Image 1 (cartoon, one colour):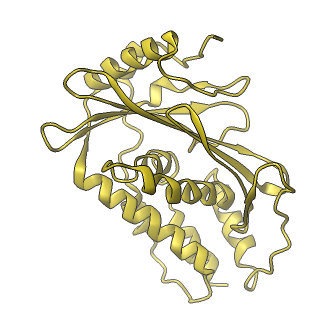
Image 2: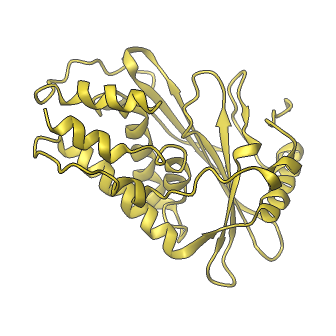
Length: 258
C-alpha cells in the first residue's frame, strides 16, 4: 500500500482555527437580493437541497472540540496506515489536516464524525473524506470519500467511494448538466437564460468556486441522502462545508437580476 500524505502533523489540528463555522443553511439565506424569477430550476433545487441537508445535520450533530479532532485524526491515521480504511488520493494530493473538523451526535449514544478535506492541484475544496466512528469504542463504522477534480470546458468530475467501494462517477458542467464519467464531457452549449449562467459562474469564480463543483456536490447529495443511515446526508454536508462560507445564494441572486 502506498503511503498516504497528511498535510500537517495531527497535533496541529488542536490549535487550527475553525474554518467551517457557517452552515450551508446560513450561506443560502445570506443573499440580500431577491431572485428575479429567471433562475433555472436545477439551481433553486440545488440550493434547497444543500440547505435542507444542513438543517437536518444541525439537528443531530454539534461541532466537536479541538481535542476530539486530534483524537480522531490519530485514529484515522492509524486506520489508513493499516489498510482498515481505504482512500483514493490522486497523485500530488494530500489530506488537509489543519482544516479537519469533527462532529458529535447530540444524543448520548450517537456516532462521532471526522471531516478530513482533500487538497491538491485541480482538486476542488469540497473534496472530502468523512469517517464515522463509534463514540464509545472508537471503532470505524463507515467511510464516505468524495473527490471533485476540474476537467475541460469548465466541467468537474465527481467520484464517490462508500466504505472504499466506488459508488458514483459523474461529470458535471458549468451549466448543471450531468453525464457518466467515461463519456464525452458536457459542453457549454446549453442556452442560458439571458446570460444567467455566464453571470453566475463569473460571480462564483470570484469566490474561488464554480457551478460545476456545486452541481457535483448536489449529485453526491442525491446519492448520500439515500445511504445516510440517520446521519443527515453526511457526505452532502461534509462536502458543502468546504464551499458554503462563500455567498453562493448572493451570486445566484445577482445573476438572476440580468
